[in-house]
Image (tube, rainbow, N blue to C red):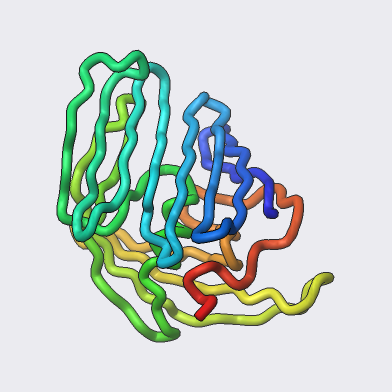
Length: 198
C-alpha cells in the first residue's frame, strides 16, 4: 500500500496513502494547510465518493450515470446546496485527481481525448467547468528494486487557456506534474490498477 508525500508548491505538503480494495481503489490525503481529501473509485475508476474538506467548508459528491452530483456547504451543515454537471470526474489541487482521471480515460500510447471536468478550487471549494485534452505520449519501463516500473507520460492541455503540462504516473502514484513533486514514498506503486484487471 503506497504512502508518502507530495510537494504541492508554496511550501505545501500533502501526506497520502492509497490502496486497491475489493471493488475499486481509495486515496486519503491531508495537506499541511488542513485540506483533507478522501476519494473512492469503482472498478472502472469512476469517482464514486468524494469527501473534501477545507477550513469551514466541505464538498461531498460522486458520479451518477453521466452526471456528477455534489453538495457544497459548511462543515456544520449550514449553507448546503446541491449541484450537478454533465461530466465524468472532478479535478483539483490534489494529485489524486490526476491518477483517477488518467485511469478512467484508459488511453493507449499515442491516444488522446477531450474531457469535460468539474474543477474544485480555493479555500471555499468553489467549482467551475473546465475542458482538458489528455494525450498518452509514451510508456517507459525502468529497472527497480522490486522489478520493472512502468511510467506513463501524459500531455494535458487546458482548452480554455491553452496551457499545457506533462504528467508522469507510475501505477497509482504521480511521479511529477506541474506544481506536484513526489518527495517521499513508502512502498511501491500498485502497478496493475483495478481498471486494468480484465
